[in-house]
Structures are given as structure tokens and as C-alpha cells.
Length: 66
Image (cartoon, rainbow, N blue to C red):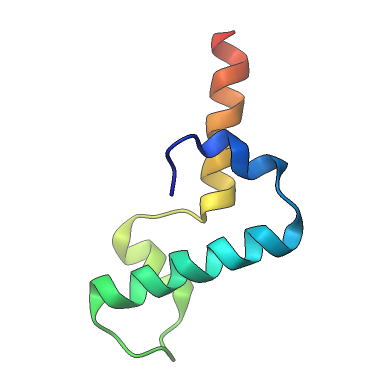
């Protein structure tokens, strides 16, 4: 999902929410937990940050490098 992550910062809110849903779904599958588990706990366990935050960071990196 993070390949060319800078593009995600240009998407509308609905598209970002759909991708975040997939990100959450992946965390549940990787850790083999129920869907009722708190996503913040799962992301912390996996050392993940929400993809839109990571996309923003990558966009800032790109601007800095330019």
C-alpha cells in the first residue's frame, strides 16, 4: 500500500477511509485476532502508523529531497 505513498495524500476522505479499512483488516489477519480488538493496540503491536500519516511523512521526505 505504501508504494508511491505520496499519492494517497491527494485522495479524498472517502478513498482514504477505504484504504484505512484494508489496513485495519490486514492487521487483524496478521495477528489472527477478532475484529473486536482495538486497532490502536494492533498497530502498536505491529509498530505501524496509519497509512495516511505514513504517506504524509513520505510526501514531506520527497519535498525535502527536492
